[in-house]
Image: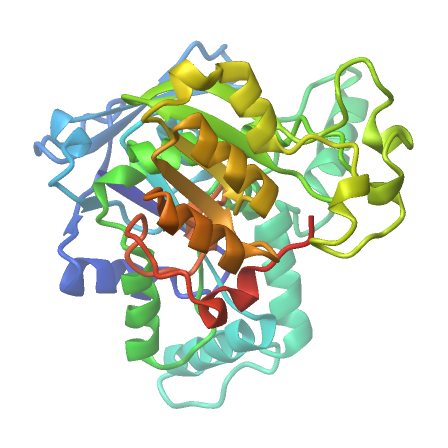
Length: 385
């Protein structure tokens, strides 16, 4: 695995880099340029310019690294000084993971002032080290602005002076890098130990950051299926899997050939009914029902059902009757207790697996291991259906 760091001014990028090397077993590696011929170690990374014209306006970048970066038991980290072009080139590689570090503005401002005082060697800091000056510098770096105007304005002025129309290169804006980051770390504490604990919770040395585990893979398919819903209450998706092969998928919505729920097809969903109430008046089929219907009972026997919302009691009965042997769910539902009792009686395993597009945005322990279905543990995950 190869990790790169990006983030806003004074967010703590260098500190995160140092902690990953000193405490979490990452090896610091260099960014070597093929053009200059620097760097030849087996853990170095090369960034090469290709297909650029004579004025460099359309230069593209290609990243290459040693095969060690792909190994699941080897962890390397690049210095926190990557340019946007370098990051864009590296993001094309499956062994690269981008970590974005951020912090509240006032916290970053205090760090900036401390850095300015330290640079003065005890002398009085420059009078320009006020909040307005910091925000100005931060905006220039974050939005890719020029000190005398935006990148676009400068390019337009140059073109007008030369009488030619030029296409400006995108500004070197930090927000463009943060937007494509795989992991986000909020460094809002001045305590080094607190930051170390936050890094530990991310578990950056998990091998499934590069290649998702089966549970993550199928849960994301269920989440993708949920995007097709037409139900007004909730996006729910389900996927039935046997021997690591997808048998069927489903999402919630009104029956085929009828008016969609989001077009007024179901009065119960459009009327604001509470979770678990008036389900007999609901015209929408649930995601689990649609997946079971699509698969058929014979193919459901012994299979596993993944869904981003714990099944209701009605779907639970159909799951048991179809012969499904395991249910993996993401978020809790209003009738989890009744569903869990029925599943336990039928010897169907129920397992909680947090569902999210970016696993870095969740805070959980022992991802993928069975979690007891206790109501107090699920209160913060409850959703309406």
